[in-house]
Length: 344
Image (cartoon, rainbow, N blue to C red; front, side, top):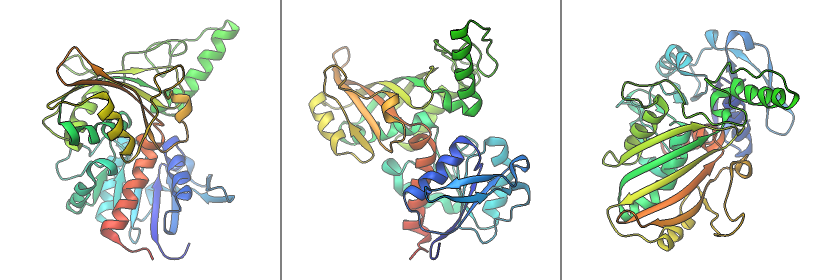
């Protein structure tokens, strides 16, 4: 690791932290030094970095000095970010934070590189950049080229979100419940509010006063901040018994006329999107097929005759990748390319 950036990955032992390390290696991010950082209980553990067999010994976040580090990619939750992101930013290390803590801060840019790359310039106000919610990230990647073409007025989205969005505990619960049901044992929920195996739960995050959940609120306000505050958004967020990969059924109402054929043509050329829309048995993408892929997949593009200038489509993406780790690394690449410009 010669010329390049000194990068710390905070929360390196979690699902998203490990994925960030994988993607930094896969994309050959220009690194002078890489540090795996986590809580005291993980200090001294070893995590893999890349496929070359290289390993990193985990450093204690409480004692980690961010001075002299170029970037810190945080994937450790809001409470950890509350304590340590301002400390890292004050030390001159630019933070890319995956938690929800800073997303709606007007002095912190909320970035999806394919959608609003120019907004990253605002990072200098606090030395912090926010990564959006996983379900928002894939949604705005699909909406952006269509909005540019015909101006979106309103979006109605229903999500089908995998248990990996709830971390390792969510994945473990789906596995254990499924196994217990097969062998006839009790399968009481502990992490989720109801049984997740062979079921769907229309509830992600806490309830708000208006009856929506915090996850639904995030999709509304983050889409407006990233894409356009004039867009009206309503969301119903549902947890489904899928390990990895979020899906979304999206209904869009446009200001201007746009046909399904035009939309397919636009999406086919759009950055970060893979259009798979054969309109035949199996001619669409499901979550199982998107795991490990960088793209946001769009299928089932069709006109909605119940509204003027309406389209419906199906959007699928690996939530641990585009929804979290990949987007964070893409932000780091953009930051380096446009602003830090230190690598050879």
